[in-house]
Image 1 (cartoon, helix red, strand yellow):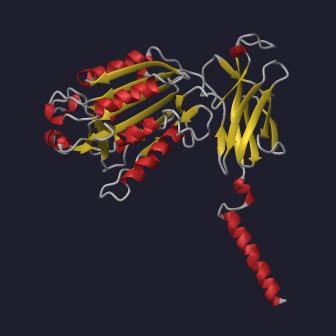
Image 2 (cartoon, rainbow, N blue to C red; image 1 turned 30 degrees about the horizontal axis):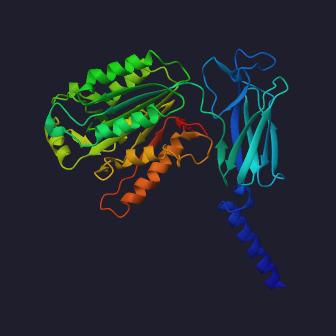
Image 3 (spheres, rainbow, N blue to C red; image 1 turned 135 degrees about the horizontal axis):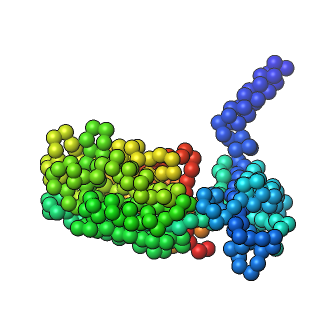
Length: 391
């Protein structure tokens, strides 16, 4: 009798431990979320223009063109097992969340009594995860890609900074479904004045609700609690560098986009960087990870992605013709779009980053100096879209 009680008690302890460790049944369930929206000009019934009907977005835009639609019926039915079913209604702001779903493929259907349109989309649910469905947040993507191979002082020259920036401009700025404008600054174009003026010019064509993406590949410099971008025309004086404070002031002054994404890839091209380090003012050192820059500019509405951690090298790979991080980042957003874990036609900052991070870490595992990409978020838990494509 005592043995049975002991076995029963031990069994209970094991079950509780499994549940507490995240191995219980509850943690196997996944969720689906999104926002049901309508065009602000839509009336009681949808017309022939699909933009006047129902649509679903992964995040609610802040612009005036679309508004949340409350009272929409949202259903998820298992593709392989129709008995797997969940239903809910969107709240006043259009937000909905379906919970308690077993992992697998679902068909999500959204209807509303005021509209003739029916929105349907497939969605894969993963254990313990919440999948956002629908299109990217409405609003255009604006891409500024900067790469400096050739500095005014040839001793600072790099090999793959410009190819990296060209690749980013191609993938993010050309093949992106929601992109509106792409600007590039290469080599002699990427002076201090050129970079700041380009931001001002681009900002004049943005509105709240848009997304601004800035990519920089080149040298960085560090002094105490500040970090600097090294533009093409750096001549040994601090005034010709762009500090994190100057960059942040320019962002806040010139860029009205609600979402701002920064990607820094500090190149390591053989021994070339030593020449820069030797020419920096007293107390300065060459920056690698842009970690201080990231922490000083990140804030509400901003996400910063860096190719490596502080004091690490961001490797350039001659056989790839690019920096290791940039190459993997763009591969994830190239057909068959392997970074798109949710398979919804949208690749978020998290999806793109974790795809690249995984392969960079895997490639450099066991190296004397491995490379560890980093992501910094101004809004914890938020992720936005870098790339969208047609399913």
